[in-house]
Length: 336
Image (cartoon, rainbow, N blue to C red; front, side, top):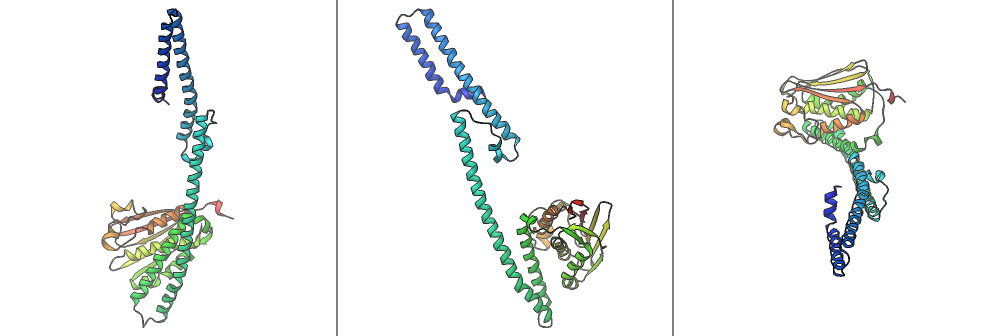
């Protein structure tokens, strides 16, 4: 609080006070009071007025200075009530009480919002599970009646199933901790499950699948990791070349980590896009020009990897290859 600004805020009171002092001077002069006494009285009144204003300023300035310093140090500004100094004046008490009511109202609104979001997420999860039942039935029916149904129909159903999975994992990604089950997971088993799930798409698209994954044990959530790798494989299939397509998966044991590499010789990612592939809704030139994309797949993958504690990187050269690298740290904290 600047002193000059404080004076401006109290200018009306100051003018009234000075006017009163001037009026008193004129009255004393009119009653023929000794000029020395008159001047001395006015000086005392002026000094008293200035002292009152200055003392009041420093008292308020101390409170607001502590308040603003606390506010500036906080990254979460809404916690200011926990650090605000004890109010001494009625004005300060009014301000603190107002802040308390504002904070209380904000918390109530946030709780209502979170409750609505939670209810919506629960509804979406229930809906997805209900939808996946007939989808599974359609997949099974197509498999059992291959001569009756065109292969493209099965491909469309599988794509629909993957898209629904993407919605489910995106909805859950905000509260993944509630759905986590961190255990020692065999990478080879995970890759086998994902390859079986994508077997038909790999065969239909004539993509060679080369897996050289060791029986490496990593600390992760098996279900979430299968979703992550399945999304990567789906991208490799989606952005394949017209011929001689291949997907290679390798695992490498390092001293303090296990590295999983998923390589494809597809159309690759342009240099200008590589730094933004994990951004939400970023489709890039490939997603706009060649194959329609939502730009959500890699965003969800990165988000889940971050929460699982895995590092994920992408290397790519346009028209040559794309390599996705996932690093699993060997952290003792996950051992139960």
